[in-house]
Length: 585
Ligand code: ATP
Ligand code: MG
Image 1 (cartoon, helix red, strand yellow):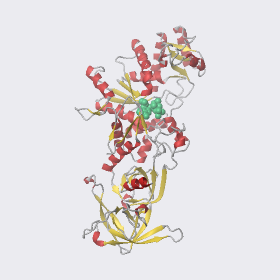
Image 2: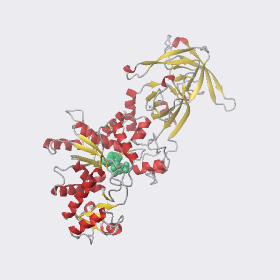
Image 3: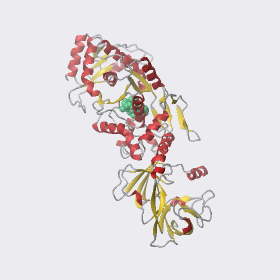
Image 4: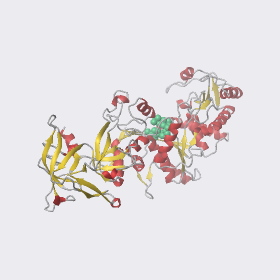
């Protein structure tokens, strides 16, 4: 598998072909090339109509986001249309909760599918009619073999299958049996309707695939109207044709299904049930992301087994999880554009996704000061009852973001990591006798270290400030090597901060043991319950995003209350010191 990764310069490159067309800034790829060619030939009367067809059996993840960006993105580029269609052909696994979460995710990502989504179940009636047509035309038969017999007769990749003894049933008999199936006169599994194609085909998918099965189950939309349900492979081409889809884009595992897709629509077109030109299926490689699992089955396990707090846990690769974590739709769309589409499987480095998030938040997130692991600092020469407001820039990347003031007083908090009693060479922050700058405030010098008598832990620093350095510069031109963030203890808002790292500790979860859960990272969440943020954040609403200066990007979590803010770390900043520390270890 090829890998997409960060080059040393922080620029991301893919080995495959990827670029921009000359005439516009539209991304180009092999799928857009096919579409451009079809438009030139007038194949679909100059229409482009795509669809995104999720099965409502889980929440959408970043892989689905790739498919959404591709399908909706193409519709947008070519002034076409993209449908959101729920593939709800399996009555047992689907739930309304999932339908709602999917609608929400698609809209949040910034795409428009019109007033209503479509449903495969909208076409159950038509699919049934089409099946009766196939039976009458001699293209389908009812097979009464047991599931096991059918499996045995299917053959293998190297040997042909064996025809069912029921394959020769007359059309009239098949029709009677199929209607009896529909009318509920047979139990689950008693028989199936199969397409009559070729039991010797080298493509197993063409060895008389099942197209209808009996299932006495309630459906989330059609209730108990049906006790037979179409198979996905039969339903999907029909849905596409009914919606006049031009390009039916799906992932590579459906490549071997394409001959059946075409066979079915050809037969139905012959019978006048669907119109030409027929939709065409095009396959692309699914997204795999390092340190992540992208399979609904595995994500469901993470939720039901309690490894995470829910589908929207900020560590989940779901759209709702990424949203709660503070990712922006713009950054996700940008990520999907950068990775492009290819015909070969690959794994994308998680660092690329984080790079895209940082890049976007850097432009838009206001900077604030927050101390995550507080250490008390007393400014001994600052009057007890005095306080003042200092000017601070909201976003150096965005002049329009303006300024704010932050309060300064005698008792402050700084980051515990910003002080070392015995600093090694490369450590330039606060230390005994050393002078540093407090951002937007003053130069301070550490005069005394106060320790807990019992544990020896540093609990407080006594510092002096130089009043002539107000705003952060010294009139005599003396230099300091570090600038620290801080908050005024009296004014700061006590908050909870949740620090996330990857949910898995290995790049390819489960690669070694076979069970992805073995690689769950036990330290993927660290909760800091005594953090302090500057007072301007009072009343910040869930979803608000900030850069905590020097600490990373953070987002207000919906768990916040009026009295207590809760923040999620969206992504770290690059930390030069952490890198040095790591290198030393
Ligand atoms: P999963 O493998 O997670 O169970 P799925 O393929 O069963 O996903 P669907 O709801 O059927 O999920 O997917 C809807 C659409 O999203 C399909 O067209 C599918 O091909 C596409 N898709 C699913 N996973 C990915 C992925 N990792 N990368 C790109 N597209 C994906
Ligand atoms: Mg699927």
